[in-house]
View 1 (cartoon, each protein chain N blue to C red):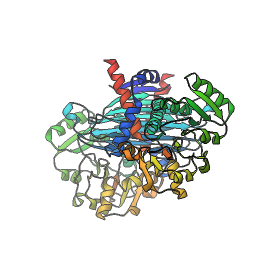
View 2: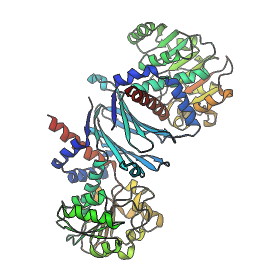
View 3: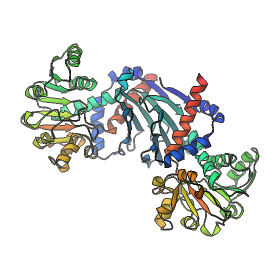
View 4: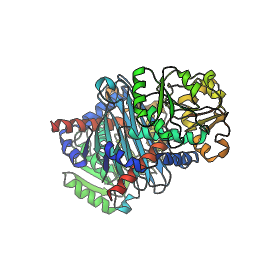
Length: 319
Length: 319
């Protein structure tokens, strides 16, 4: 009999889990070819504008496979509805039986995305993080910062946003969690002051320009997950000492790397996949002068790892 | 708030619906290009053997989009579990909100498949059906027969199966519903006696040979939905006056038509899509001598139509 869990039940088990570790293991399995993950399923709607993504698959030979269904309908705010919706389904890889439905309302997507940012920072952030820079004062701009706590003690933050109101709320929220936050409307202030930067916006034009990026900087670009979105000047990837993708196959078609390939500023052979970077010490940050870039498009393995961890915790609790 | 319905609740509203009409309208919309239906999502498992299909999409501009998830795990019978599992999810095309989960355990897939058989027979069956021939004495072999009741009064049936036991049970079950049934282990007996034939088996080698097929016969092949499965000698399609596919794009890759293309016995230009056949009187059966073949691979539009109809009925009932 299928079990159905709502967001409150899911949130209740999360503090007992280690999503960063799960997601890291997932990326390793993915890059080692131990997973079966088909291309992302997609529907695009015009009126009103929206999109649907189906990310699914498994680690071959394990207990489970997972299907994540997530949508964005960008005018929902006019109806006082959330723009994002999602659920995850966990099935048995031995029988195909549906084991549980996690009605997480896209929350687990936010968590697994933030956890991926922390995994990247663990291997690529400068040894001494002076200040953390966040572009995007939304949900992901908050969660990325919180998850970085596991990999750096730095609590000095610059945040960029599109209006003073959202920056004020962000500052208030994050200072309540112990950070010291300075808001800015100028992206340049981020690159001038911070050496660990996360971009978490739905921008369709680059927010950061190549001349602004200084030696010793790491940038994780996680906002761009479609062919249209673009947060970084493609020349930044050319300037970088190391460019990392969560998924080589997806990055060829989506996000910053696809834009840089189009612009001819990098070649696919120069891009390393995150799971391989984790496994290869020579691909970790090796100096305080390197510029490193990670482009996250969001991979089904993250959804698989987080939902299996949540399902097992919920099941253990029930016993 | 999402509503979740189980199989009993779904079965309770079905008698008030007209799946044949809904499915027919769906095929027309599909062939008219009014739908947004991506390629089928697929996972294949080796140990134990199983597969998962995700069929999804919408009629553009309507209220809903639908995702159907269905699996087959072919050794489940050893564990006393059903081999097939499935559920359907209905979402709002205006907001992306999940409206309902139909935990139909693959039942609605059976219904929409049987309804498609009836739609085909409506346009292609001989005017006077002498005897109905069914190959495959399983669930679909039963449902195909029952749904044909809507398009022909014929109750004389030959059924082919792989062992006398299953044929005995089939005979008993269907005679209780008013049919007169003769079981046979020889597929030839079907072609010799019947002019409306449905193949509903998971065969991987042709069951019917070209020399057996007589003028005036219609065959609906609905068992083959993967590149491996094959119920008809590819030469039968060459001999036919009319070859119809539920989906041109799917039939190129799956089922009888893909096998005939491989064998070089037909060309894609000779194949007509069901929705266009419905709309074009010149493509309906025009004589008692024609041989017509329909190859059904199962299209998401069927899942969309049946689940929207069921959801609307369940919602109306609740009011």
